[in-house]
Each structure stands twice: as structure tokens, then as C-alpha cells.
Image 1 (cartoon, protein in one colour):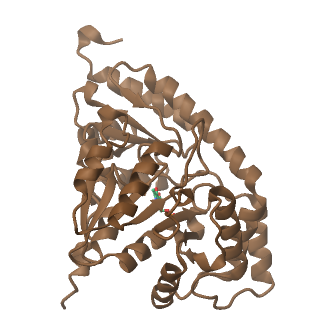
Image 2 (cartoon, helix red, strand yellow):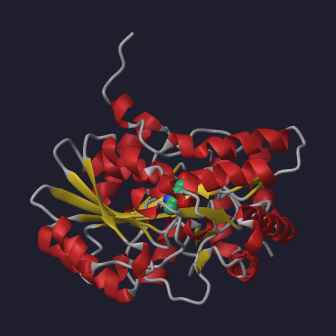
Image 3 (cartoon, helix red, strand yellow):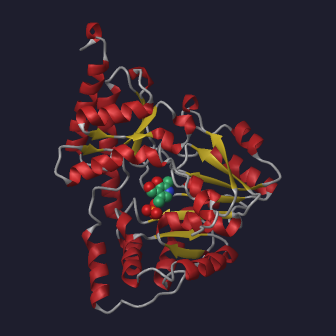
Length: 396
Ligand SMILES: Cc1ncc(COP(=O)(O)O)c(C=O)c1O
């Protein structure tokens, strides 16, 4: 039987870079001694009070259909939070609840892009963006944030990428994989160009609560941006709720009306007990988020110290999130070879960062969404592996 051309367009996403991760996950299931540092699924269980609200809600009979754009209490919680963080005067009609940030990204792409449109994406970019942007037939135009520039934005490169066909700029800040945050100056440049060329901005902010020393900025807070920004958030990372599949978009009311119609035919609403638990979390569980953030910071520092001591590695310090980029060129291996051999020799699985675009050849992404003991042991094995690559005369 024949399939639509959409099914080809959603094939992107560097599927083979997940091979080692897939093998490692299977090995762990079989009880083998592996350390998985290749995925961004927090090791924490969702904080207990959030689980309690969901269970109570279920027991009270919250087992029915819900509105396509989300239940009112959750939309209001998200609106209050967005208003507090950005100063933007919005209400629940500017909010749609989605099945994770991924669903919001896909919905945004389907509602604002079509064949012939070009969409600028800051690269390195999160793995699903390619298929998400190509799904409606748009062309992805990468703007590279080069490793030699510390993965920072080059305004000239961004300006040069804009053409009469450009429809939108997509970015994730804090970034997955680099953990880098766009500065206030970067956002002003993006906003200025978006206003000048009448573009949408899709701001993926799923890591915005896991920020360490730096300051995070919301582009929606800038003058003139409320009407053209789709701010995307999620419970997944900050509240350790990946499996609850709860995210959102904050956008102009017209966009919310469109995404609600799309959600109706694609999703038909999220479970009410899940949404009630999410609303409770947003309104009451800031302390749990802060606690997890402190733990992530400690883990990041542990990796910086241990991996930073290995001469062949160049470790990039992330401002935020749960990943760290490591330049492995000094080992003499390409990133794909490094990932394969490291796993084969030590059972440690990390991710080949070319998953996030060709500009990150030579890098691997290491996740610290796992406990300090495992991270410590992972670093020890990585150091031993790199030592084994050295000529005998240089071995330490
Ligand atoms: C940058 C970025 N955006 C979106 C997502 C998807 O998040 P969610 O679980 O909310 O769908 C992820 C997940 O890793 C991510 O890293």
C-alpha cells in the first residue's frame, strides 16, 4: 500500500546515532554492567505530592474526556507563571496544553509552516526538529552556533540566512545539547529580525528551570514579541515528569484557537488527572524543582572536574540543563567511533553529537540525568578507555 509523502519527510533525525544507546538499554534490561549517559530522562521519580494529586484525582473519578486546549485550572496556572516570568499580560486563552513540548513543537510547525517556507533553526539543534519542520513541507535552514565561538550566536550568520521565504525561527534556549543560554543581546537581535521580516519565533524553553549561574531570558518579554512568539514549556525536565507527557504553548489567541482545533483531531485532550497533577506542581512545587536543580549542578561540576582532568578531552561548561558537550578530537577518534569503542570496551554509553547537526562532528553529548556514583564510575571508565588509546610511551 502507498503512504503519503509526509511519512518520508518525518524520517529525519539521525536514527543511527541511537544504535549504541539502544544496545545499552537492552543490555541494562538484561542486568549487564552498563552505564547509560546517553539520554535526557531524569533519574528522579516525580515528586510524591504530584503523584498524590494524580492518584486522588483518579480515585475521585477524573476519568473522562477533557477540553482539547487543556483544563482551565492548568491553563490558568501556566498563564500566571508565564506572566510572572515575562511581564506579558496574558490569560488562559493564550495557553494550550499539549502532550509534552514535542507535541507543541509539532503543532506549531503544522500551524505556521507549509511547502515553500524556510524555517531557520539554531544548530546544534534538538534531534526531533528536522522531522518536525519538514512535516508540513517546509525547508530547514540551519544557522550554526560554532563550537569555536562557544556555541554562541553569530548575528551576521543569522541575518544572512533570512530570505523572502523565511517563515519562522526555531531555537531551544537553554539548548539541548550544549546547555547554552541565548543572551539578552542575542534575543534582541532575534526579536529585531523577526519584527523586521514579520517572522514567527518558536522558543523551546523546556530547560528554563534548570539554569545554574547564568540568567535565562524569555523572548516573549521583549516589546512587539507577544504577537509573534510561541513559547514552549514542559513538565518533563524540571519536574521529572517525562512519562506524564505534559507540555504547553503560550501564544497569541489566534494561534491557540488553531492548535486547539489541530489537537482535537490529533489528540482529543490529555488525561484530566495528569493535568490536575501538573497544575498542582506548577502552583506548589517550586522547592522540589530547586532541589533537583542543585543536584544537577553538583553532577555537572563533578563531570567538569573529572573529565576536565583528561588531557585529550575538551569539555564545554553548560549554563543549564542536563547535558555536557565534550570535544573528543584529541583522542584521534571521530565522535561515532569514540561512542562505539567506548561502549564496546567499557559499557559506558554516550551520544554522538552529530545527532544535533553536522557542525558538532568531533563532540559527544554526556547526560548527567543519572546519579553521582554512576557518573563517577562512568568518568573512571572513560579515563581508562582514553588511556588505552595512548601510545605505550605516553600511557599514564
Ligand atoms: C530541547 C527539547 N525540546 C523538547 C523536548 C521534548 O520534551 P517533552 O518531553 O516535553 O516532549 C526535549 C526532550 O528531550 C528537548 O530536549
